[in-house]
Length: 260
Image (cartoon, rainbow, N blue to C red; front, side, top):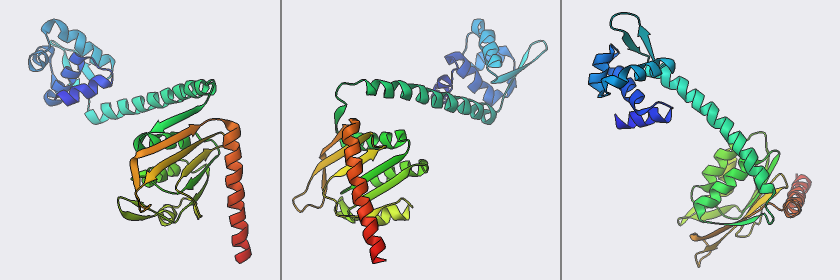
């Protein structure tokens, strides 16, 4: 019951309102006295609590002596509240992202070091999510779970122009991972290329992320605790790297056309 009450509180109910609603889901229909007894809410508070639930459209009230309170279906109520919260969260994301990006543009030296695999992957996903037109990547290796996370992010942004140049394979936990096959199976544009042990993500020619890591002596496995990401929002630098990327990509396409 505590878990249900906490979730209802997160939807905007008070503690007493949540207790009353949970109690009514088992009683279905009842009067204030019984609801007070079953829920443990003081008699002096119960009418105000039930009035609040009626106002928030969680229950109905029938005239009579005494008044009868009828619970509304949890499917109806919680689905409605979930839609409302989702809309509010989306609006909040939009507002705060606007503030965040404006703040980022004011930073004097927009270069940050990011440590830790999880934080690096999360930053990559944020960059992809912010992109307006294009995302270009050079992939020389992948961390555990990173390929899946990138594919999921790219599939949500089908409007983007996505280009990936990648090494054919890398090793994750001593197991060979076919980078090219994995992305092609997930219908993400990718081409095989001779990429060193580094990863570069460039968004809209405006921001980029370099990722470096050490490898085991046999040059096969990533050593995750050594990973570092360099997040760069100098547009001139990002544009320069993007031009070099597109030159390499176009040369490869032209060679392929000649062979065909």
